Amino acid sequence: MFAHITPYPGDPILSLNEDFQKDPRTDKINLSIGIYFDDAGRIPVMGSVQRAEAILAAQVGPKPYLPMEGLPAFRSAVQALLWGESHTAVTGGSIATIQSVGSSGGLKVGADFIHTWFPGSAICVSEPTWDNHKAVFEGAGLSVQTYPYYDPATGGLRFEAMCETLRALPGRTVVLLHACCHNPTGVDLTTAQWDALVPVLKERGLIAFLDLAYQGFGDGIEADAYAVRALTDAGLSFFVANSFSKNMSVYGERCGALSVVCPDAAQAACVLGQLKFTVRRNYSNPPLHAGQLVATVLGTPELRTQWAAEVDAMRARILAMRQRLHDVLQAKLPGRDFGYFLTQRGMFSYTGLTPAQVDRLREEFGVYLVRSGRMCVAGLNERNVERTAAAMAAVLAG
Ligand code: LMR
Image (cartoon, rainbow, N blue to C red; front, side, top):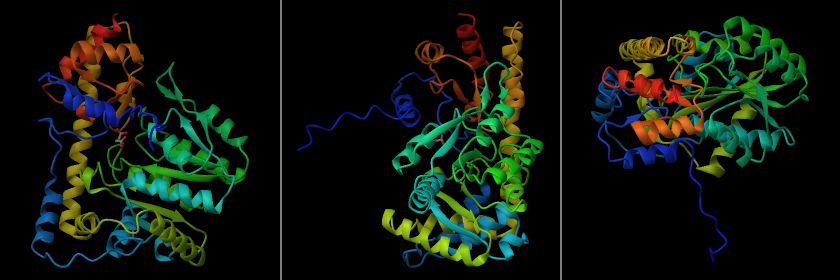
């Protein structure tokens, strides 16, 4: 029956993380998967989330199915977080938001919706992008193309080349954009570049799909929503998938959202209805606890304030690790420029290491990076940063 089934070669990120868990070395360092670890090398339990859990535990009750679109309080909280509660798109009801199974679930529901309602639309993703983007959209039946993005020569952005490619796309091509903290490079658009991109999207009639998985880890919770608000204020209709995995440290709860910004409330109601149908035929409805947890953090003013301060502290720690890594590497290899560690934002940096150098880092030094050369800077801490820098310097020196 199953003789024709071929072996799964594994996922470049998740399978590597499994390999890391199996590695018996006690001094191994995990800089592969996009998980924020604290300075003690643990996945933090945020104080605000812990307090929300206590509130929920004190009110244990029946566990009904959520509606297909998720918990109403969660959906409102997401809109308030991304746009601000008094934004006219929010008050006017022109955004259709569903609770999704992580932001990956939001991408998948959005991809299925696009495949149904924009048949023939292709998707264009940055070169490079998160490894799973291609798989999710291809899996939904879209053909995937790329636009230039990362410049290996400078460690920065090929903005002109990116815009030129987007200007040549047929209307209604979907353009996947990382709203902040680009995964895997850490290279983001400036606010001026977002402002320059908006007319390109508008004039060509392109469908923007923003991936906002790291809100708060770039320049701040509000600042990282700049792209979402700029596109909305320009009158664009678009998709945005956001995640709470990282900024609430609730990875396994699988909690994210998909929002579709529409021209008016009537269209948003139809879009929401079709998103519900897409959910129904995928997994029926999202997890109750995840929705309640995030809604409690965001909807309880005291917890919301505490959460924002905790996210600020996480971002500050990532920036401090970037600085330390930069300083040690610069001292060890003064002929090279490691300034990109300081300009790139969020959890990830593209190190420029080749797959062979990444393999050597892992095999010889127990330092795990994704083979593309992506490093999760948020896995560095006071105890491993110098060792990582020394290993990297050894590998780079050949
Ligand atoms: C990552 O990029 O490492 C994370 O988003 C985890 C994942 O699912 O790939």
